[in-house]
Length: 402
Ligand SMILES: Nc1nc2c(ncn2[C@@H]2O[C@H](COP(=O)(O)OP(=O)(O)OP(=O)(O)O)[C@@H](O)[C@H]2O)c(=O)[nH]1
Image (cartoon, rainbow, N blue to C red; front, top):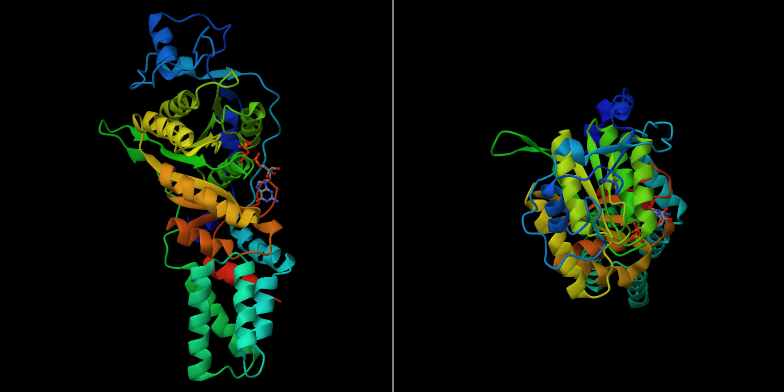
């Protein structure tokens, strides 16, 4: 996703049009809905959450190729909810500047401290140790820290650093190299065409430990996509936390995006994900965003849950992106989480949230190295439009602002 792509949408964001069509929530069939023939029962059984009158018990077996026994128009049951006034998401183009402002406001001790040391005359071993410690404290990670120190030492030895400006330029160049500006950070949100010529929505699965900001990120991302003129369906597959579906539905309804959810707490997340993708196909949506619970109770359980969701989704549409949401303030702990999710979920991009709450920007470098996938989006606050595509140059410039 390139910022330039958003510029045309600065004016005339088609929210109102999308909103008028979709200012209803979409729920799985309510228990008081007319009972469907046998096929409905089978669908409920196969996906593990009741379409009608089915107890909340987990399915004995994983859903095997859930059969589309419910007509799409029956699946999408508009429901009267208190629909908030439709909002116009903020243009994404302006967010670049905000990233820099937020980083600068966070005190940016990383850039300031590094520059403070590098600008000294005749760097001693103590100075180099101080640089190293500063980088490690900022969560850059041991490997990248060594690389940066080596590169800076070489530059200083070969060319010397004449003044503060030159120190800044060299540091900028080296930090940028660590952030790997060449990585493809675009989000795969283009719908594709199925074998039968039908439109298949891009499906984005959002995973991560609870509390990192998944639901919020899905909501914010929906706004970005709406601002970009895309039609979106949300899937509330975080069925573990009771309020998560309500939270997601509220995000969606603010920009006219429907949410597919279960009426039952603890419903099978794979079934909700499956229904969301099916609703996306039926709606002719461009993108389906699926929120998950991602409890890190143990690796096997997580693998089981996410594996099942993935398998069920990919029976209808390929997964375009698996975004791992990480809380930037959690440091090494976040990296451990990243490692586990990286192993079980086939992560294609990282969303680093709460970057506004930390001066330790180095986590960007560390997590990319750890997973070998790029940071694609950053969360910069709790506001609805506080999500920005990650831009390495703006990020490094933000770190080096003083
Ligand atoms: N400051 C700040 N807060 C954020 C950001 N992103 C999310 N939050 C806050 O983090 C808290 C948790 O966000 P949720 O979206 O509910 O987290 P979750 O991962 O979905 O949590 P579970 O549903 O329990 O799995 C909320 O208070 C959000 O407002 C961010 O970029 N910056």
